[in-house]
Structure formats: structure tokens, C-alpha cells
Length: 143
Image (tube, rainbow, N blue to C red; front, top):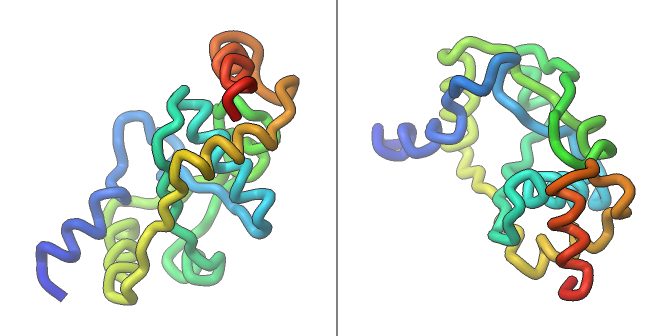
């Protein structure tokens, strides 16, 4: 494993200023949960662009540290119930990222058609009132 590969693997595991309660993730066990997560991310961005999800087994994550249930702050409330955070220091996040890179783990890309299908499956009343709901409503004719 080269240093460049490890650095690339760590890129999405770097804590930013907005990560006040740790690195954000979702606990999605069923396909319906995955669709909700894709819809929540797209709705939050108000963008139909691809959504990349890296699936990690619960036991794999917990081998590196504790997982906390945290409010998500996404505009689809039911998706927020799936939100978790890794309240870890950067070295532990780097270790998890290195582990995933060493094992060849890659994100799954959910293309525009998948994003549209995910948004179509969400009840409009389940989207926060305001610009996010208006955005989803404006798409209903095209989903």
C-alpha cells in the first residue's frame, strides 16, 4: 500500500469545522434505509448529482472506537433517526480509513437515476417545510 493510496483513503475521514460531534455516518441495514440516506443527502444538497456511500460493517467500525447516536440535521426526519457519529480523534479515523483502504473497500456510486428514485420514495410531508420541501415538490413531475 503506497502513501498516496493511504492519503486518498483518508480524505473522506478528515474532521472538518462542522464535525462538532465527530465524523457523520448513517446506520443503514436494509435497502429502504439506504434509499432514505441517499434521498437525505441529495435533499440536503438540493442536487440530483451522484451520491457515494461507503458501506462498513458495524463490527468493523466498533473495532476502532465507539459509535454515538446523534441528531442528523438532514431535511428528511426519518433519515435522521439513522444518523450516527464517530466521536473520535483524527488518529483513530485515520486507522479506520487505512484499514478500509488496505482491504480494497470502495464507495458505491448512486447515480442520478438512483437519486431520483430515492427522492420519489420519500413522502413530501416527511421533508422539512421550506426550501428543501419546495425543491423536492418541484421535482415530483420529473421523478
